[in-house]
Image (cartoon, rainbow, N blue to C red; front, side, top):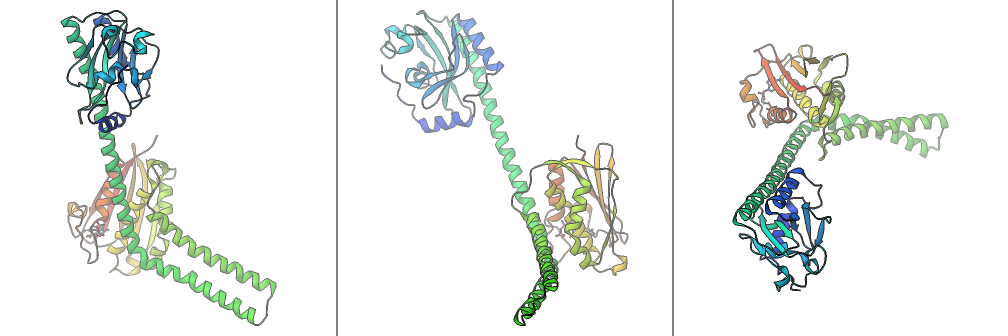
Length: 412
Ligand code: ADP
């Protein structure tokens, strides 16, 4: 039995088939209907949508046949895909040298008649299988039946093209999501850069304590002046100082880590609280006290909490910077959260000078009024919120500070 030769560009054909991720999937009504109709219109006991992979033909839909696949070596469809633009019609397989001793002809299902229309992918025009009708009696198709089979094959092909388009769309969406994640991370790295001065200052305190305690322990050691109670107090202080230094670094590392957690249901109030804890040293350095006016019950949102934390960090750092020129007693920041209908609303207000540029400019990438600013912060905030189906806006009056307000859909 001569086995069908391989199509011209078999590796690309197999890649196109694999790209559809259709092999071994569950039956689907739309494909099943096509084979039922093909069998009925062509008056054959068997109709198949067959896809030919490396070693087998696998049936996405099968009418009148129990098995879901047969070896490629026996597949009539492996021959049909060699001529993608025309049907393969075998009137009597017993009298066709290509198929006469084929086990599917000499044995079950005793194929005599076969008509297969190749199915071709949209993007690469690769023949990946066929819509075929099969009978155990040698026969012909009428002109009308061949037309009907061709129309049905077009429908099957359209379903496959739709699948191709959906896969491509999902791929593009995922690439966009990856790009947004990367952009957000670059934004966090930039924010972390702004925090470095404060972090190193903050680290100074535990490091000084560690060094001083180590020195004391060293002197005690040299003088062999070990005293159980005092040593243990010094050691636990040393441990505490190390813990404090570690906490500062851990928070910063978590903030800039490459893979931020996926979206999940979380409480906006908790995100606000942890953000303020994260910026604690920054507040102390800037001598700003943050007034909190949070909703009394949890505010559930479905979000990537690191990204939302990033938005709040951005707004707070902008507020701190805006009030830099003011005396400590005039520096005030208020963070409020509440439920408004189906939205969770957060406002960050400051007592700074207000915006010196239009709202539109403030949210435009690379627009900044700061000497060392990047002008990326607010545009990234806006993208993060949009990707969470939310939005951000600002109201500001010269000399009366600025209020940034963002909202997200409440979860559940
Ligand atoms: P950057 O902070 O690098 O300038 P942003 O996108 O975060 O980038 O901010 C853009 C601009 O919006 C700032 O340069 C500043 O002019 C203005 N802005 C942002 N927040 C405030 C605020 N709280 N008060 C006054 N102006 C602000």
